[in-house]
Length: 282
Image 1 (spheres, one colour):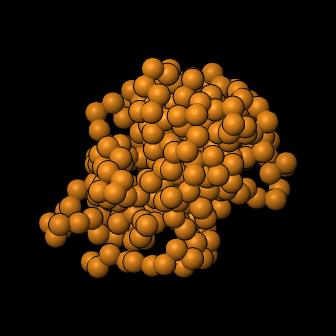
Image 2 (cartoon, rainbow, N blue to C red):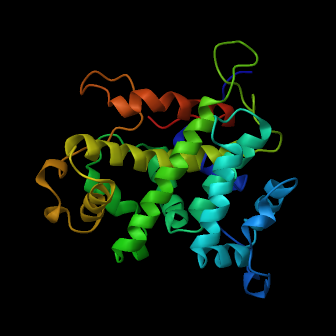
């Protein structure tokens, strides 16, 4: 099957029409939803993944999970240990990876971050100064609260790991040298939605890794603090990171030399976009 290649603006229009871009838009009657407090056990065993997928479409359930980090963490731990500890290749593993990411994103401000960054990402971010990129996409709530900001970034980094694992597990079943549209994924998986979310999480991971390489002695919390400063008060960030220009979609460029994190991980993101039948920005 020929890979579909489309322009950035057409991608946006296509995904809006197919419902892929409004990742976390819920129905207007969400206040009427009344549900019991979810428990980790609700999502274990046979039917657990289907139950979680259903509940993540309920704003009432998501609100309860967002207010109960312990339960959310227990569900994430169950998905990691039961499905995601040894690669992502089976149908259940693929579904678990997508649900793990959705759970992470929807229960933090990362959800709003996703909505803000979609246009920026698919239009291309190469050559954009790091502070300009961050300040154009970070949600206001996160900009005003370092703790919320840190939780959001951590959620994106955790999700990025699973999105890239999902891409890595895709197999060229047709043996034509590439992943075709819909090839190797569980039936019904919304790959346009997944590819866009994956691009968002990956972009944050590239920013994180670039700062980590520039300031290698920093801890995770300190790196996130630098990202926060670059988003809110760039002059207060370490001078060494103030002029970085992330280039997440240039794996082979020689001038400047390719980012090693990008070179290692962009191919797996590419597979997700190929499977979705859309083009990576660039």
